[in-house]
Length: 195
Ligand SMILES: C[S@@+](CC[C@H](N)C(=O)[O-])C[C@H]1O[C@@H](n2cnc3c(N)ncnc32)[C@H](O)[C@@H]1O
Image (cartoon, rainbow, N blue to C red; front, side, top):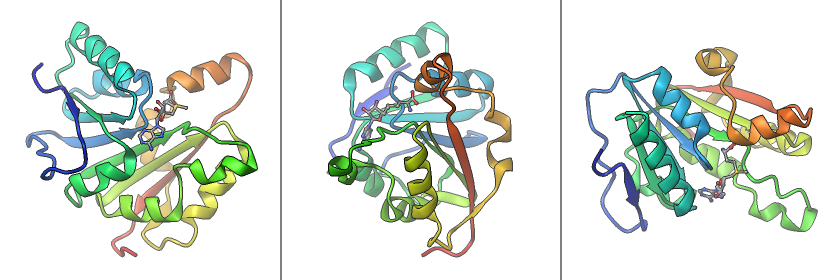
């Protein structure tokens, strides 16, 4: 599986995404990759991209994908904002941002990944009917996610967008479930109108 793992520095040309897939999904902040590996196993005709800043985690995901014979996985070592200019517009059928670091302390809130600005920019990367899937175990962060998306006319809530994946749990989600902590999921479909 050559070129499964790429280290992106944010300086180069746009990513070349191989044609011939039924759909392309991005797991942004994929962590240990349990979610994307399961997606890749269930949907071999889709290209599943995992992006994270932690190279060690990505290397482990690559080894797991190889052992499982998954040839529809692409891994990117890249920071979320740096990925934006490298992604072509209108190509992603679904973006997952699942259990992002919650930064619960008030003085750390500025580190949170989810903002209106990021979600607005991501809308441009989705296909015309693409889906944005968000999840968190942190109640206040869930409300922050809803508030971040509320002013964006480029999305409308649509639970159907994640119907084929509702029972797949991320690694963090499994840990939370074992401790009896529920994870809330949000699903939005892109509207034609972009803001
Ligand atoms: C709490 S973990 C969740 C991982 C996985 N989504 C899950 O639910 O099991 C958050 C992940 O996001 C990654 N991350 C945090 N900030 C990021 C950023 N700005 N760009 C890319 N990845 C980021 C971290 O390295 C970490 O692996």
